Structures are given as structure tokens and as C-alpha cells.
Image 1: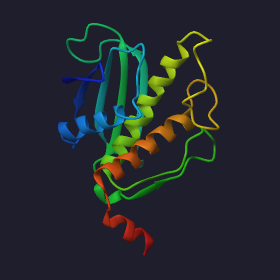
Image 2 (image 1 turned 90 degrees about the horizontal axis):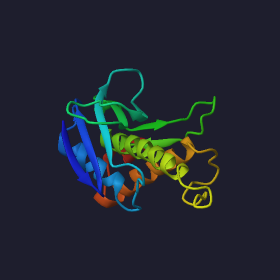
Image 3 (image 1 turned 60 degrees about the vertical axis):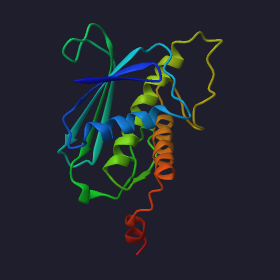
Image 4 (image 1 turned 135 degrees about the horizontal axis):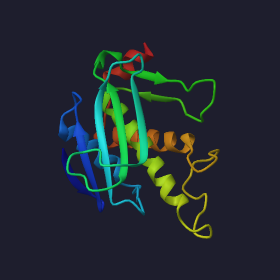
Length: 185
């Protein structure tokens, strides 16, 4: 288990995936940068990244208050689990939300790294949503949420944040991938 301080937040990482630790730290740093995702009441977050062997390409979960999930943990803190397939050949992919609802938005990911950024952005946004909910009612507002989101924990808002972070990542690293031409042909 490795931990680092990012934007005043201690993040403990357990990486059992085929991503290198440096790649995962880069994805976490990218999600936490501008527009800055400030977690008000959180001091520490545990992140687990694993390979995913199901029919899906990626899946994430966020548990708000779990007990010590890593060795030498001393208290309760959130746990984010991100699972991404190890098969690069399954990308690019277009994820359609299910017709049964849930508020998810359609998204396009070109590779595994983008899928990881999308997942981490989505799950960290849920932590931000719970922090905003814990504010006094007069301090709370819908400002910062995406249009059409409802409730405290909005998958539409979290997905929009994840998609925004993926687009920011593409612009930042100037990813003009060969996938774009293959998809258009």
C-alpha cells in the first residue's frame, strides 16, 4: 500500500491491476486538478484498482464509510474501487446507459487509461456530492451540479464530471489517436 498527499487529501492506493502505480497516480492527480475537486470533510481516501474479468469493460464502486480496509489503517474513511479490463483490444468503446434509468450518460473511451480516469472522476464526484450534502442547508446550493441532475447522489452529475475529465485529459496530452480514424472508416 502506497499513500500520497494530493490537494491536502491523503490517498492510499492498492493497485493489483496491470496499470503501473505511476499511471494510477497520474489518473488520480488529473481527476483532482482544475476544476479543483475539493472534499470538505474528508482527510483520507482509500483507492483500489483491479483488473476486471467480466463482460463489462469497467466498473466502479464507492463506499463512503468503511472500516480499516488497508493494513495499518487507523479509522473510517471512504473506499473507491475501480476495475478496468486488461484487454486493450476491447477499446475504443461507446458506453450506452441502460434503458432502465439510473441517470448515466453515454460516453466514449479510447483506451484503458481514459476508462480509469472516467471511473475515478465519477467516484470522486460522488464523494464531493456527499460532502456538499453535509453542509448547512443555507450554505448548500445546486451550483456545481450538471443540468438535469436530481437528488444528492446524482449519477448524471458524476458521469458528466468523469466525461469532462476524460476530455480534459485528451486535450492536455494531445491524444490524437489512430482510433478516431478507424471508427470513422
